[in-house]
Length: 124
Image: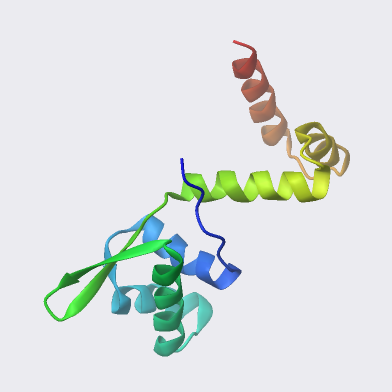
């Protein structure tokens, strides 16, 4: 499977909107992002154009407007970003990452229970 192209944090925010609901027009994305980002419409349009150029989004013409749809799922991006982070920070070893989170106290009791369930499932 082809890896998704790298995207910036700002582009990730645009993708989050489109992963929730798709396809959307540029104006739909602008309206969805306005409350949390206060970005100007041209900023969002520029981010959409970059994402299309990178191959993260595709467009479809509908009358006089374009509809934007992700080319990759959020799950694909999360997997790719996780693998990249794991490789850079922990030398590719998931054990180091897990130990870090457990020892740092960042995991709640519910998180620990979910982790135990996931480990149990992985053994099956």
